[in-house]
Length: 113
Image (cartoon, rainbow, N blue to C red; front, side, top):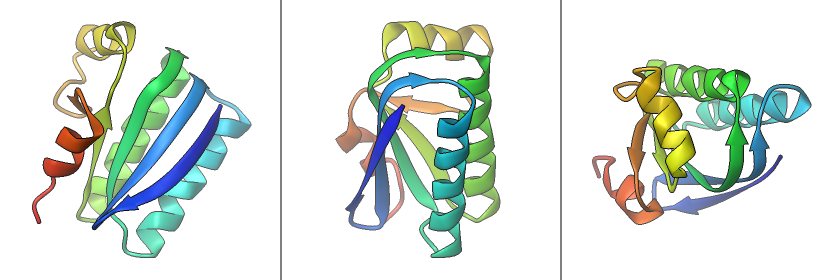
C-alpha cells in the first residue's frame, strides 16, 4: 500500500493506493495519523478510491484512526470506498464509527468550518 497526503483547507486528505492490510504499511499510516494529530491536524479524509481489498487488519486501522482523531477533537471521514469495502463496513455494523461519503468533496464538506 502507498499513500499520499494533501491539504484541503483545514482537512488533510490521505489517498491510499493498493490493499489495506496490516504490517509495515499499517504502521506507516498509523504513524502519519499520529504525526498529524501532533501538529494539530485532527480532521482527516481517507480516500479509498484506489484501494482494491481490505481485510480485518485494515478495518482495525480505520477504527484506530477514527478513535485517535476523535479523541483529539477531530474526526475521520472515508471517501470513495468500493461497494465491497462499503459492504464490509455495513456487515460489521461500523457505519457509525466509519462514516463514508461518495466523494472527497463531500467528505471534506462534512467537517464544520
